[in-house]
Every structure is written in structure tokens, then in C-alpha cells.
Image (cartoon, rainbow, N blue to C red):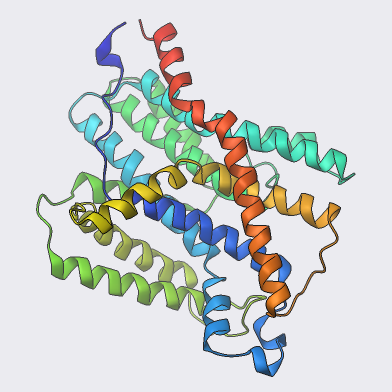
Length: 358
């Protein structure tokens, strides 16, 4: 095997595992809360307090969590891709195998899981839509198979456009054709998400060597500010507060703040035992965060269509206990699917590269 074709193991970047899992878990919290509880202003007066307000406010963060995924993906995949392109070390075949296997195994598993659940529950679905989602055409030629799948087409087209840039720099004319196809795809998709992804990529590519605490704390404050501002630009089932402002512009500033924060936080190597333990705690959780993101909606669909759980609960003890049980069930189901599928991703990559990159 030609070892130059296979990228070396990635150096571990501190705290990114925690961010990956927390973002996925927030999406789970958001969707479960939205399906299960009444909106905040419909709660009994006795249940409307600062704690319940904070819970419902955080429960609006699902969209912002996806933006975190996009920027993180740009930082980890796009940034390292740009670095390899600059060093003339970008191997298109190895990159394609990495991305196809990484996205494909959990995606196929989630779609199969969804088809099984919908078939058992007699819920209408379209094989055309399922196939379109496998080909990352949701938002271009079909609708998402399950609501969280909307972001997957963006991820795949981000990867394709980076691959096309690598091909162009490697002197391949096919890269220009592929780049044109990507340009046509983003005429149907929202291009500002691509801008956010490349912001993350350049944040990694231009990352500093030394930590600056002023930038770290300031970027964190700005990230919180623009996240809250983004939340306040839309109404939702959770809380009825909003004011007119272009959310896309706010989200770009949120992503910009996140880029500076990522540059600094990866330089904060945990040394104290408590921080080392936190890092180790999140690592196994982050491993199945992608499967959790893809499958939690399907698990909720199964539960709400097979188990008698009254929708629109108040925030009383019974509702809180059932809500925690829902979260736990989604987590355990996702981990079980991950264990038999996504966990094998690295082995599958090595096997394919061993066969094709000789």
C-alpha cells in the first residue's frame, strides 16, 4: 500500500468533542421539547419562572446548534483540506473515501431505521425521497426524509466543493466541471451556509500558534450575544418573543465569533484533573453525536405513534420525568445503532483504502 495516499492520524484538538456532542444534544432537547411541551406562555402562571423560561429559551437553540455543526465541520474538514491543498498533499481519492464512508454509513443506517419504523407504524413515506436523501438532493430535488436531514445535503456539497478545489489545484480539468455543478447546487441551497463553512475552514488554516485570552473571552461573549440575538429574531412554539432583524446576517456574525472562539479554545489544553476528566467524558459521547442527530427524530416518531404519551404536557413533575425518559430512550437507541454501524467507520475506511489505494 502507498502510505502517502493515506492521511496521517489527526492530532486531537481539545474541547471540540464536547462542542460536537453538546450541539447534537441541544438539537435533541429542542425537538423533544417542541413535540412534548406546550409553549411557554401557555404554561400555568405558577410554572412561569426564570428556570422554566431558561429551559424554553435554550430549547430554541436547535437551528443555532446546526450552525455550530457547519462551522465545526469547516474547521476540521475544510481547514485541514485547505492545508493539504496548500502543501500539495491533497489526495482526491483518499479524501473522497473518507467523506463518503463518514457520511454514508450513519446516513444509510438512519434511512433504513426510518423506513422500518414508518412501515411498522403505517406512516406514509416516499422511496424517491429516501433515495434523493441518500444522494444528498434534499433541498435541491426533494424534501428531507426526516426534518434533521435538511443539513446533510449542505455538508455533502461542502465536501464536494472542497474536493473540486483540490482537483483544480492538482491540475485536473474535471475539478472545474465539478465546481460548476456545485455552483448550480447552491443556486437551490442557501449559499450563506457555505460562507459559514469556509469561515470555519479559514479559521483553522489561519489559526494562531499562541493563545490570546482577551480574544478567547471576547469571542465567547460575542458568541453568546449573537446567539441570543439570533434566537430573538424568530417566534417559536416555545416562547413568543421576536423582533424584526435579518436573521441570516446575525447568524453570520455568530459564526464569525465562533471561528475566533474555536481558534483559541483548541489551544486550551486541559491540564487539571477535572478538565482532563471532562474531556474524556465527552469523547465517547461525541463519537455517536452524528448518529444521534440523524436518528433521534425517528425514535421520537416511533414513541409518539406506539406508546401512549399525551402531547403538550405542562412543566410539572410528571411531564419532566417523561421528558427525561424520552431523551434517555433517544440516546440509548442512537448509541445502539452507532455501535453496530458508525463505530465501524474507521475500519471500513482502512479496508477500502487498502483495496483501492495500492
